[in-house]
Image 1 (cartoon, rainbow, N blue to C red):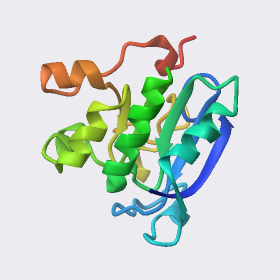
Image 2: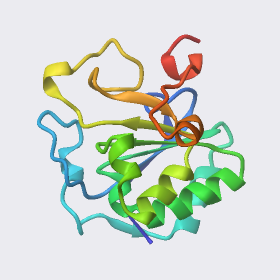
Image 3: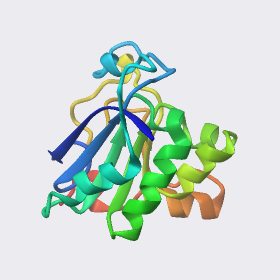
Length: 170
């Protein structure tokens, strides 16, 4: 069961193309300047089964990518790992935002490592108001990285994506 604050079925700001953005409820980071502070509190979201979320994603025939946002998806890592695997089996590209860095997730719980291994792209790092930028694609602050998870896990270190789609260079 996922605890969500919402789902946007036709997002164009949470990754390239038309995507479904799934907003987790609950976040331990509480970054000053966060654009979703209403998602910080745990226990007040809507409980939704993984299968129901997959059906919502599939209901938009234009969607080929899904982005987990928040709140903090890695605070519900086991449920989001199940969702990521189900979506990947159906051919969706899966990305996730996280206030945790790749390095922190590598040292995280088994469920966090499982979720990490189940996604394609990780946008990592806490939002830093002092590094806020409206000029960078799919990130709120310059410290955040867009990582190719498969390459990062293979190398054991953060590898930034070279995908022009993710870098905003269509």
